[in-house]
Length: 84
Picture 1 (cartoon, rainbow, N blue to C red):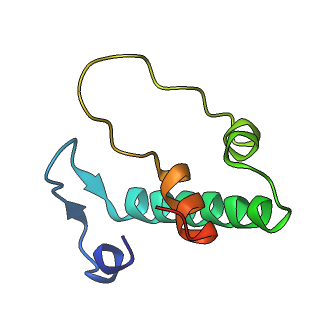
Picture 2: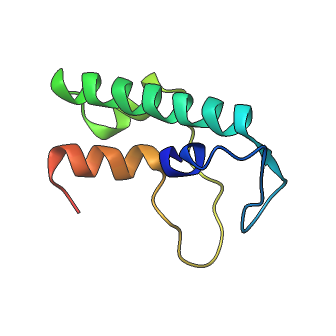
Protein backbone atom coordinates (compact mmCIF):
# COMPACT_ATOMS: atom_id res chain seq x y z
CA UNK A 1 0.00 0.00 0.00
CA UNK A 2 2.93 2.31 0.59
CA UNK A 3 3.91 1.92 -3.05
CA UNK A 4 0.35 2.58 -4.17
CA UNK A 5 0.17 5.77 -2.14
CA UNK A 6 3.51 6.83 -3.58
CA UNK A 7 2.04 6.71 -7.08
CA UNK A 8 0.16 9.88 -6.14
CA UNK A 9 -2.90 8.99 -8.21
CA UNK A 10 -6.42 10.23 -7.48
CA UNK A 11 -8.09 6.86 -8.11
CA UNK A 12 -6.80 3.31 -7.78
CA UNK A 13 -8.29 0.30 -9.53
CA UNK A 14 -7.73 -2.85 -7.45
CA UNK A 15 -7.78 -6.35 -8.86
CA UNK A 16 -10.87 -7.01 -6.72
CA UNK A 17 -13.35 -4.72 -5.04
CA UNK A 18 -14.36 -1.13 -5.53
CA UNK A 19 -12.28 1.78 -6.80
CA UNK A 20 -10.09 3.33 -4.13
CA UNK A 21 -9.14 6.95 -3.54
CA UNK A 22 -5.76 8.14 -2.29
CA UNK A 23 -7.37 9.00 1.05
CA UNK A 24 -8.85 5.51 1.22
CA UNK A 25 -5.46 3.92 0.52
CA UNK A 26 -3.82 6.09 3.18
CA UNK A 27 -6.53 5.18 5.71
CA UNK A 28 -6.14 1.46 4.98
CA UNK A 29 -2.36 1.74 5.32
CA UNK A 30 -2.65 3.54 8.67
CA UNK A 31 -5.09 0.90 9.93
CA UNK A 32 -2.81 -1.97 8.86
CA UNK A 33 0.22 -0.33 10.46
CA UNK A 34 -1.69 0.28 13.73
CA UNK A 35 -3.00 -3.31 13.81
CA UNK A 36 0.49 -4.68 13.15
CA UNK A 37 1.92 -2.54 15.96
CA UNK A 38 -0.77 -3.79 18.37
CA UNK A 39 0.02 -7.42 17.45
CA UNK A 40 3.73 -6.68 17.97
CA UNK A 41 3.04 -5.25 21.44
CA UNK A 42 0.95 -8.27 22.44
CA UNK A 43 3.60 -10.71 21.17
CA UNK A 44 6.23 -8.79 23.17
CA UNK A 45 4.04 -9.36 26.24
CA UNK A 46 4.19 -13.10 25.55
CA UNK A 47 0.52 -13.43 24.60
CA UNK A 48 -0.46 -16.60 22.73
CA UNK A 49 -2.26 -16.33 19.40
CA UNK A 50 -5.74 -16.90 20.83
CA UNK A 51 -5.29 -14.03 23.31
CA UNK A 52 -3.96 -11.75 20.55
CA UNK A 53 -7.00 -12.55 18.41
CA UNK A 54 -9.32 -11.97 21.36
CA UNK A 55 -7.67 -8.62 22.17
CA UNK A 56 -8.22 -7.55 18.57
CA UNK A 57 -11.86 -8.62 18.62
CA UNK A 58 -11.41 -11.40 16.08
CA UNK A 59 -13.81 -14.27 15.95
CA UNK A 60 -13.36 -17.70 14.42
CA UNK A 61 -14.14 -17.80 10.70
CA UNK A 62 -17.33 -19.64 9.78
CA UNK A 63 -16.90 -23.34 9.16
CA UNK A 64 -16.87 -24.35 5.53
CA UNK A 65 -15.24 -26.44 2.89
CA UNK A 66 -11.97 -25.73 1.20
CA UNK A 67 -8.63 -24.30 2.21
CA UNK A 68 -8.45 -21.05 4.11
CA UNK A 69 -5.73 -18.44 3.98
CA UNK A 70 -4.42 -17.34 7.36
CA UNK A 71 -5.79 -14.05 8.61
CA UNK A 72 -3.62 -10.93 8.77
CA UNK A 73 -3.29 -11.44 12.53
CA UNK A 74 -2.18 -15.06 12.16
CA UNK A 75 0.34 -14.10 9.47
CA UNK A 76 1.86 -11.27 11.51
CA UNK A 77 1.84 -13.36 14.69
CA UNK A 78 3.64 -16.21 12.91
CA UNK A 79 6.15 -13.79 11.41
CA UNK A 80 6.90 -12.18 14.77
CA UNK A 81 7.16 -15.50 16.59
CA UNK A 82 8.98 -17.19 13.67
CA UNK A 83 6.24 -19.80 13.20
CA UNK A 84 4.94 -21.04 9.89
